[in-house]
Image (cartoon, rainbow, N blue to C red; front, side):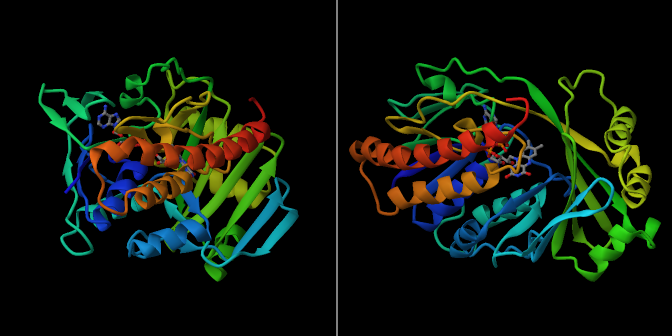
Length: 358
Ligand SMILES: Cc1cc2nc3c(=O)[nH]c(=O)nc-3n(C[C@H](O)[C@H](O)[C@H](O)COP(=O)(O)OP(=O)(O)OC[C@H]3O[C@@H](n4cnc5c(N)ncnc54)[C@H](O)[C@@H]3O)c2cc1C
């Protein structure tokens, strides 16, 4: 049975592992962090109907991850006037809190039940090098492992990408993705909260000049918000400072939104910087393939990162559905790369045009 090593247990690594396990392969993941999931917070990610179909094919239970099927999207200007209603949405479009989806994918990959053998996940095991020619992966404590196929799913600052000759990629200017929430019990008369109580399967966008606030609800106890701020460095940032930045960015917003923003506890604000990167030239080298953000990080603008990680994993599984010999791997990976690059670079082109500072 071919042995597959995945470097990184993010969404791309776990999706790949789950798919390939179901096709009968032996899969091991080496993950640098502890993946504690102490809290199931984090920004919201959306998936479209096609990605939802892939998750269903993998018998992934979206309810476990508390996915919300979107029935409606409403867009307002900051004054509270409806800009446009995108009306009823195609069935199957969903959102999740990213870390809930992440944890549920991990649980599905290593579950004793389900098709194939459970994926073995080694936490706290940082990979320091991977070789495309031999499939040898070396971890921090000096041990080495050999995979017939090695999947580099180690994200934006990928180590596996260093195995490629032209790895001169450096991250470009960054913006800050900010996520926060408000307890609904605090403000039961707020009009936004009331709308979510009547229609929870929706989300709202509040759009001003160069600012956008996305409002979601994954449970009745909280309203959650995601936005992006033009802050170039994380140095010296604190939640209290960010609360002020959010307040300033939405100073002209409708009183109902401002009431919610004023009610945010600074300790409920999370933030991440998100870099832009040039295209990564090559994604495959003999036995090694890059997937997810290691190959194609997206900007935080209507992010397709989650969807493209899952569709990339499904496509990879398509080319390895049947058992394979080591001598066939390169050709199968090249077939995957041609189709995937065309699709992803098309989407990257669209988002880079739409992203104001790029
Ligand atoms: C703050 C934030 C907000 C986002 N919001 C959205 C959104 O709204 N919509 C959307 O579609 N996408 C969003 N994304 C992007 C989306 O989550 C990613 O595109 C997607 O998760 C794919 O990630 P990945 O698995 O390739 O990489 P990652 O999620 O970065 O996972 C990489 C994994 O590899 C591990 N790792 C790294 N180096 C090593 C090593 N040397 N050895 C072993 N393990 C290693 C890391 O610990 C990590 O677990 C967001 C991302 C971030 C960070």
